[in-house]
Structure formats: structure tokens, C-alpha cells
Length: 329
Image (cartoon, rainbow, N blue to C red; front, side):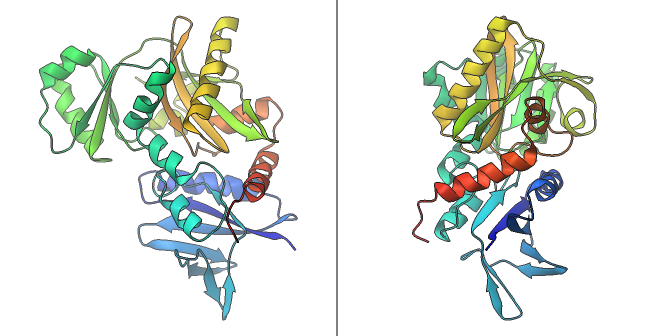
């Protein structure tokens, strides 16, 4: 009998539509001859299973639904939700409570990696190079002059818990800082400010494949605008070169840093981390525990470059979570 798999997508943040595109790619590449696959759409109004042509509410407590008097449950979940609740641990916790295995990071690791500042603080003692940064809280007072003195200009102002470059502003002048902070606060109640690093920007995927941690070829990012923003990521306003044009030393250092970040954080399944080089040293920016899977996204580009088909990767992730399932069910 086929294993019943839910592909969960959408979410409750600004990344909802991007996640729907990622989920559609997962649905496209997962083999129907092996799995019985159901799409589950998460939104602010609820969690809905697409059962044939019907839309049925999911019982979050059991992660199941009822159709024509029959209860439908799942053997495993493929998590394709960017942002909350898929990257902040909420979905993972619900699935753990329902004893259903899932792809990707645990609830604990997801909570950590969704918080950019906490991730940086966690990695700092492990010799990972990173930019000077400062965390601001929504209701706290902040002094613009002190921030500029500590961080310098230009700098980046980011929503601390958001992805796809939502709530990110590059600040060139001190008088731009307040508006940038307000923009970031539209996405989250915490703001991360980081000093600007001038150098080659790369993004690199790390996956678990056939039981091994595999570092994929990095992608060099050349934004046509001021930085790698939403338009650059999803609307073609950038050049993406895979593999990145790095020296042998730079590539060796990057591969080591990316793998160290993945394993130190306890990531699972797949991730994509962003770095900027200063000389031969890669400076870590952030890790995405549910990387984009659209046709324009970086991790699919990198997997294709080494001959890993997305269907094979996704299938391996599902088998892995089923194999490593520690639940009683």
C-alpha cells in the first residue's frame, strides 16, 4: 500500500504565495506511483486538505480530516511552508503531538533558525565569522546616532524573523534609519541591524542525501539592484552563477563553514545558507531551513548541477523521516 504523504504549503506570513509555488514543485516531482499525495494549504483562515476536488478542514490535533464519513490520516508530511508555521516550529510541534514524521528540522531547531539573531548568537562560539549586529525590540527606545556609531554605514535593517527578503532595507544615510526600522517592524516585532560587508555574495545548499550530509555547489549572487532583495530573488533582477566563481581556498573555506553551520545547528533534510566573502573568509548571514523550491530558486539549481533530481531528493527526504521516526505510531 502506498504511503500517504501530505505536502504542506502556504503559511501565515508574507511568504505564503512563494510557499505555494514551492509546494507545487514538490507535488510535481514526488512520484505518484510510490506515494498517495495530498496538498494541504495553510493560511490565516485555517488548514485545508485538497481531497480530489474538495477542500476539507484539517484537524490540527490529529492532523487528519474526514470525508464521506472516512478519516484520512498521513504516514508523513513534506514541509514546504516558508515562514510561520513551517519554519518557526509550530507545524513541527503539531505533527510531533500527532505522532506524524515530517521532513526537515525539528521544532526546536526550527524555532532557533527562524530567529536570525539567536542563530548568530548560537553560532558565535563555534568560530563562524559574521557581521557586527544589533537587535532592536519594537517597544524599546533606540538612539540612531549610537546605532550608526556601532554598526556603521551603509548597513542592513532586517525583520529578525522573516524570509524572502521581506522587511529588509539597505540604509546609506543616518536619516534613512527610522523609516527602515518601521519597514522591518511591519514583518516582525524585532529588528536586526547588521553592518554592510563588501565582497562576493554566495548562497549554498546543504542536504542530507542517502544518509550523508552533502554540500552543494554554491551560487554567486550578483544583484542588479542595491542588494539581493525580493525582486532579485523571484523576479529575475539578478545574475545567479552556479557554481560560484571562487578560488580553491575560498571554496574549501565555504564548504567547511556551510557544513559546520548545518551540523552545529542540528539542521535536517535540507537548508540554504547565505555568506559574503571578505578576502578568503566567508561571513555567515543566515540559514533558511525551508529553502525556496520554485523554478527560480537556488537550491534546485545547485542540485541539478550535481545531477540530483528533485524527485529523488524529495523521495529520499520522505524515506529518511519515515526511517528515523521515533514516534510510537
